[in-house]
Image 1 (cartoon, rainbow, N blue to C red):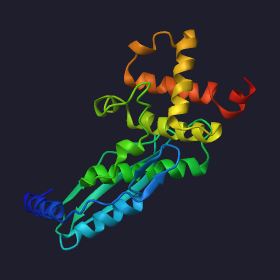
Image 2 (tube, one colour; image 1 turned 30 degrees about the horizontal axis):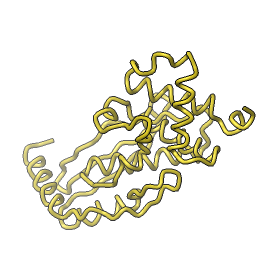
Image 3 (tube, rainbow, N blue to C red; image 1 turned 180 degrees about the vertical axis):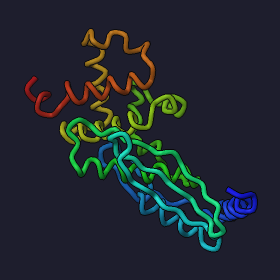
Length: 215
């Protein structure tokens, strides 16, 4: 990017920041009793703040290394650009096209909001673990790859629906499985990412609606 283009882009970004009016949470997550800003809400906020700045953005969806992926590019009318890295998503083993679409929508919202400084209440919508068990803090979330975190959220939502339980109820079942199953004896010493993977395994293999009902 040429120096003049960069100056114009950064000047426009400064104006954009002044224009931002943080959106109202307009989406409801019935499984986790929380609210968040939908993708449409984030886009509307960004579009309104971009008025008069010369800025625009585009979000691409592609398959990278066999995984559905999203990236966001910010452009200025004078030629300056900024582009995120590809955010690759790791679907569950039996993911349907609808599941893939849901993950892509989440990734678009997550990435655009973070890229443009929009408060979309992503952490709450990210379905943090029950306070009675363990709560994924902001610092611990940073230690978990976006692919694993996205799969954890998707699997948790699916398990809550299958078992007709809240996230707190599912986390209680996960805790019980960890305490009783020797396979997870060293759980507390694992990294945050390995813990999330273990929880995904428990939800898929041990807490699946049909299998759980047979116990």
